[in-house]
Length: 227
Image (cartoon, helix red, strand yellow):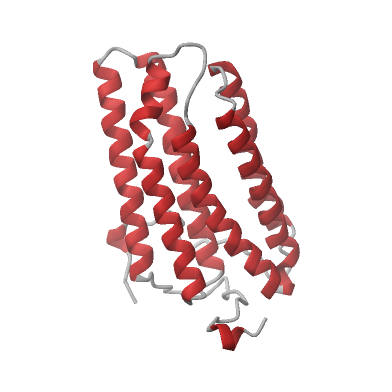
């Protein structure tokens, strides 16, 4: 690949001990889309509680928050490891914002299918939004695998576990599972997505991808200093 011809910046990774890393305006915008999804989830949770669905509303809300937070954490982790700012990365971030929007659109339907449970769950729109977010991350980890041979073992682990999890999410949503089946597979798939970073960082060697201690992963917009 001729990176200069394509207008790409080599993705070689940041110094994990670099201080005062500043956020881009695009990252701030991405954060705002996530904040909106948190707000929509909170509103749906409040409506469910008002209707007396406490026993169902709490686990559903926790599931939704976990999905949003994990996509946020994983992107922040990647951005802390690779500070590449070219058109490819920007498009991937914008695709993630589209995914967040789709996820937010599906929240009302998602909460409703749990509240009015009739033997199967229809969470296809929410899962579609989540998979869009994660597929954009898949493209970023795949590019890192191609361009950063020093960290290829780690980035490959991120890519494979993320890819397998998204296939399983799509199959699960398309099957319209029962509540029990959904709960079991949610735990398994989330464990797989958590295992990916754990395993990848074990393979990091002298050039770990982990965010250093001074670098907060979930940083509020008020703590950002746009570059």
